Length: 320
Image 1: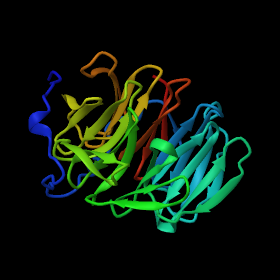
Image 2 (image 1 turned 120 degrees about the vertical axis):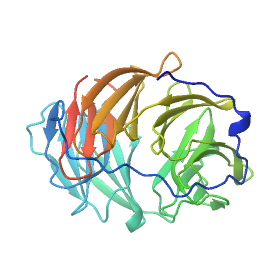
Image 3 (image 1 turned 180 degrees about the horizontal axis):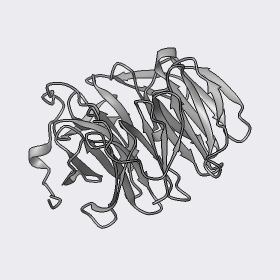
Image 4 (image 1 turned 180 degrees about the vertical axis):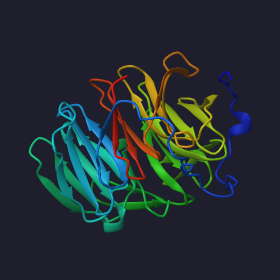
């Protein structure tokens, strides 16, 4: 099926979008039929989040039961990973700066910051628990709370709540504007930091789950329920493409050096790479993955792709 482009008028849902029946999540994966491509790093537990740091060539995996981080040398997959205990399960891993990773732990209302070169850690208590953060204008930090609401933390520590959100799982910044992906409403919504309110909102299909921003300031969204890859522009705020991707697209990562969007398919246990440089996504790679591939990350220097299994099959490392 070919990709499709849509106008914006029928897609604007305004300040009061109609909720979908339930927030979408990953499809339940079947038992694997094919061996995963690439190498497998044992994790010993379900993987909840991944990050690949090019500065130190380190794969960082958050796992549950018990909650901890695994630091794996990407240049030596046979080496024993360094383990760091966490006060709770990490919902997301984010780069604070080169060589440093932050694990967001909503259950503990904290984040753990790790210097990947030294292995030193610092646990930081948060006044407001977060599952996702992004930097807005004038050093403000926008956060998605575990209950799906959205808040703004100013540089001086002042906290403001943005009304009208109840299902946000991801916040991103594109073109200097902050956007919230609301799974309950299956919409992408501007966050007006100056007015502390929702801005324009566009419907993102019937079951949007994850979002990333590319180097062109486009927001790429996986729509898991209907099986689509959606591409939004930030200026103007428009839905530009809806590309069919059967198989339950869920986890999403963007390779900015090669303009590849990597998507995991949770219904079929696959990893697919789409070239998104020229408009409509074009499939360039397809690999069998570990079972229940709920997380994916990219090493921006080498293009290495890592996929985490949420059923305990480990971490897949693919060199396309």
